[in-house]
Image (cartoon, rainbow, N blue to C red; front, top):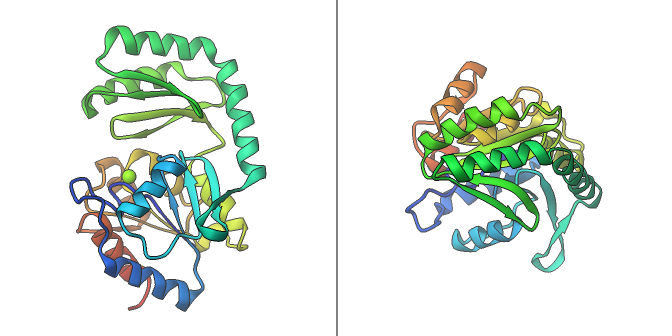
Length: 252
Ligand SMILES: [Mg+2]
């Protein structure tokens, strides 16, 4: 099973959301030769991801999607996406409980964000608590502050460059990937995960995937992690880098 991040892994900023058609040829070849399932694990909402598929002119749909770093969907009939009811319901319930329990600490963080930084606190339907910083350097400072405060057993966060989303420790791209793999009876040692940013680290762990890689434009923390794990750090950025990783693991 293949699990890929979307932004800055498959599509690069400033590329108009395009993906090299050769990438899809690679994917189709691996799907038909190895019977592999292929999916996307992203911080985007399902709606935003579907827009991304359209912009990138996906000729085929993936076999699964992990959206908002935690919700799981499979393709249904007529291009509709069907939620994994059991997983998504449990995920929503656990987050609801967690945010209620963490009200005070989240309020304190919000106060810090609104009074001491240029960042913005985000709270919308389906996404109760998040932060958008004005720069990556500012998010470094915010991350340090948040790490100090969010020591509640289940409260953690996912960071992607200047974006941060609070979440329950049990739900991330990694656990979403393992849950998706259950559908085909695939075990973690038969998963290849690829991503470029902090929020991809959960799915790049050895207990989640037997093989891993990152494109050449990945943040240093991810590059170092992949290198130390013996995964494939591509020279090229974006989907060209992903194709490099695919040819490293599959013989063609
Ligand atoms: Mg990314």
